[in-house]
Length: 279
Image 1 (cartoon, rainbow, N blue to C red):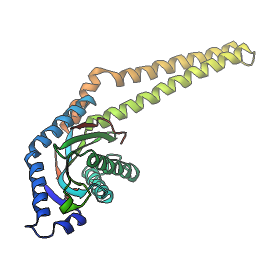
Image 2 (image 1 turned 135 degrees about the horizontal axis):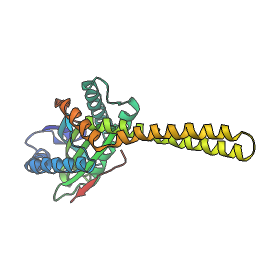
Image 3 (image 1 turned 120 degrees about the horizontal axis):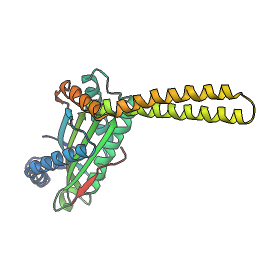
Image 4 (image 1 turned 90 degrees about the horizontal axis):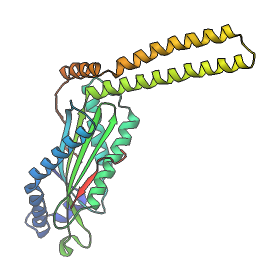
């Protein structure tokens, strides 16, 4: 796990044998000792969140882990934004830009993660590290899990009145081919259902015209027959897309084509769904 200190912290630490340096090392050692538990909690919550979403084929395409030491008053959001943006772009390129990730939703999610990190810092305790977790569906098929474990420290002689916060930060991007296929199927079903509504509305209008003597009975009958036949065709399409057998076949084919490449990026420097904080 890489480490990064803010410039202000580096200035205070100075000599490696100084008291501030010793205090920083103690904080780092405490977080490192709990690193395995932190990662275990993160993996457990990631699996749980994906199961809740019904995702059975997640593939990790980007993984990032770092320890950051900063003053509580420091908000180096831009550094985190840049790294999250880079990670999402690398994940998108790994799938030949087929993940429907646009600059707009990449920037929006990068802001969300940066603010989530800042929230974790504010939630830090001086006794035991807190644990915060976030899972979000960025676009169909792309899920990001973020975990933060923060510990705060105050020492007047070394750091003045300000609070120093150490945060272990894990960031993982996962892709689900099944979710992409499912979302496309759901969108198609919604379009077909809208088509049925339009067909039914046409029949009602034709009936109204007939009642008001504006069209003949034969004309009204022709509209009704065409609408009836159209509804049968559309409903058969909906039933085919909704069939359990098709769902099973889609799941099997997408799982076979699933890639499992993991891309490690440089060290880390929307609704808040599935967020949890333990103290």
